Length: 297
Image (cartoon, rainbow, N blue to C red; front, side):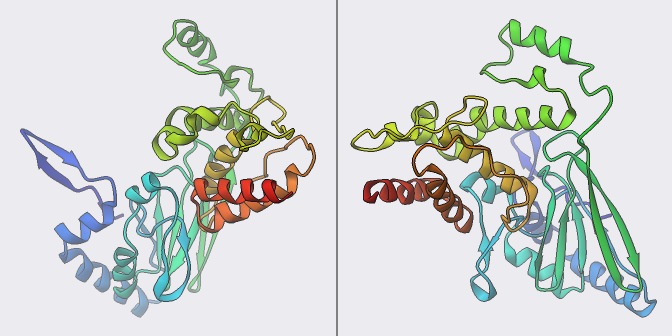
């Protein structure tokens, strides 16, 4: 277990450097590299498998490009929380091969320079789960067990209902109508996207979230598309982006794409948006790609 908590003076108190935490660790505690290198060498001599854990990821949990051009992906706010690729490469050069992290409430793994970072999901956030690890003769197998059905998950629903009625929780959502734990956490994620992620990452989209995609075209247009629960097509894309981020390290599609009610050619355009969006997660760019295709169509 590695302690990756770094505190800096902030006025009369202290501030935890949680963003890009491992960059701060390597800057403030350079002696850890020699200690990790020694532990890795001892494990190799004794034919043991060295597994390291800390609260924060040692690699960006979304990577774009390969080779010398590899870089962190994701939105600006997501990237701010990630370590630099240099931090991971430094740890890999010291001999570290497996690291298990939390903090971001994501599931998946990334690899760079021989170092694998396994993002262990939280049991209380989408996608809820835990990891089972088997290590034998130098090989490591990681299985992520999802938590879809959890007895008693709705025990606090009465208290949540009181908060909603008294205005402590704003926004329209269907969390309290969830029949299983997985649905509850997905509803919670949608609420986070609407109230936190979109305002932070894509503030220009706020006025557009409740509009059919056809209304975003310069000439209006007849296209309308919404999800089964009435959310707009654009909002579904924003939610899907965060499902992709939280379900996989390389933005691979391991979560189901939202069900979209088809009208005209909405599905092909959705696919073009989604591919552009995942290859380089800049939602404004993806929207421009969509609108160009509509204009040509």
